[in-house]
Length: 159
Image: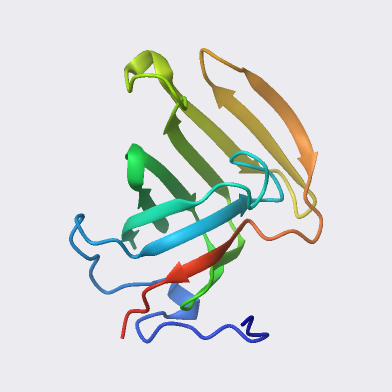
């Protein structure tokens, strides 16, 4: 069932955007998520399911790194209003979000690495640029009222 109120994990500290005091080992799955970045992909919003393998917090650079199965990675720079519970991992605002993945169905080589960068220009606009041999993209999208990073799924809580 959906919960209307988000319950922060025990180690979450709102003002400092910390989620975990120490990341779990890479072999441990933290759960499965469908996700959406500022109302945009990857893929259709909430269409794909990703296996979260590891979370890393870099307090010095104010960055959250999420590592998923199939060598996919999401880097959230300067996040604020971070909430994580057993069903959601959400970030209301961020300066930049980078999604890295290998083009689906192709061998994982430097040529198939795709990097999508979402850079906040204002509370209502984000620039989306893609570094890819398969589908270049450079556009500004409207994001008014949309969270920077929203997810839904089943996550292990960190108690």
